[in-house]
Length: 168
Image 1: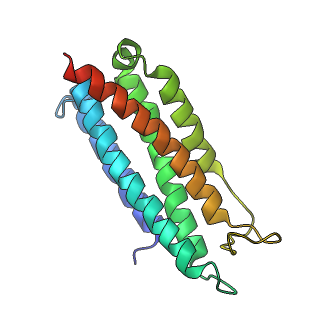
Image 2: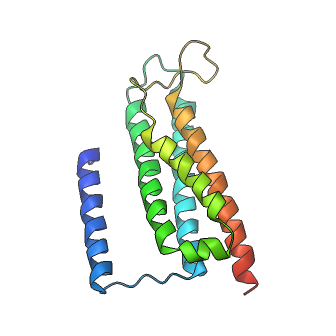
């Protein structure tokens, strides 16, 4: 598996290339509600897959005395939440008019708040203890809860965009 550092560097490089193309006019961002809806649907599916994989890991490994891969799972999901918080933050600038017109601004800011909370969640030691433990935390469950809360907001935004774009 490629290291997280290598993945982050590659993502940052691609992100900077894309921003340069947008700034130079070589790439065009179509700011229609349908395109925002499409981006939301793609991110929703990816976030659902990530949540599902984390849930499987919790189910399969939480009874282990020590879960040596809990930190890998934790930082992968945390990285996604952070990345999506940055993507959505910037999309809010690109689609500001759409958010106001379709009355999704409050839902959007709530989603950003939850994603930011997940992106900065930083326990000292990552634990994947039994979900019913009274003594040991399960940080994967906490992070998955934040991801699920953000997914609820994403679903509400998608519903609103779908209903409003279908009538136009």
